[in-house]
Image 1 (cartoon, rainbow, N blue to C red):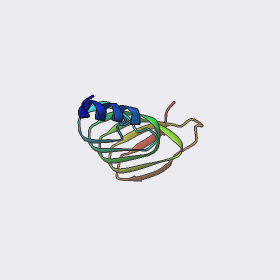
Image 2 (spheres, helix red, strand yellow):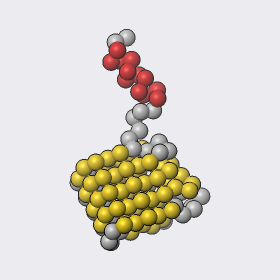
Image 3 (cartoon, helix red, strand yellow):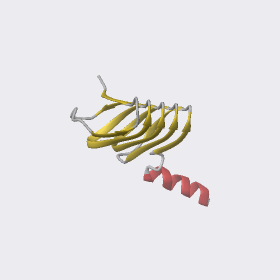
Image 4 (cartoon, rainbow, N blue to C red):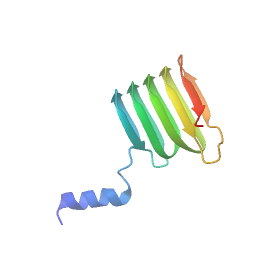
Length: 109
């Protein structure tokens, strides 16, 4: 086994494939925060985040995010015109802090 093959196998076994941070603009993609914090920095992104996140941090404008949150999670938004639709396993509300205009945060229906 080569060193590169070993490192790839080690990363896969450790669950490193989960993505918890995105920086950029105009993307449509899925992320897996693996129970940690999902951070989205940029503008005009459409993101679907899975993994029972403990926290969501958005810094930017015009982002649209659908997220699965863990019980007692937090949402922290700095920017304008961001839209977050969340769900939790127990339908409990996350703690939300918003700085900026035109942001919307709502529970998934």
